Image 1 (cartoon, rainbow, N blue to C red):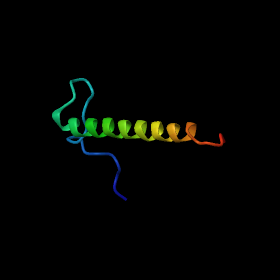
Image 2 (cartoon, helix red, strand yellow):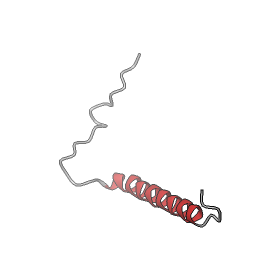
Image 3 (cartoon, rainbow, N blue to C red):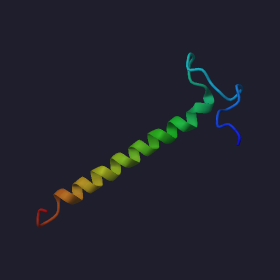
Image 4 (cartoon, rainbow, N blue to C red):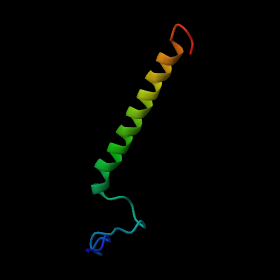
Length: 54
């Protein structure tokens, strides 16, 4: 059974600034957070706008 740990060349120490390779991942996380916030806002608006309040 192969080991799940990455090779030493694949690990990255967190002592320096983020590399350019981290940029798409960061934008993806930001996009996910904005999408989740918009979904929650839409759900709250629909919940508060319901005619018979649940």
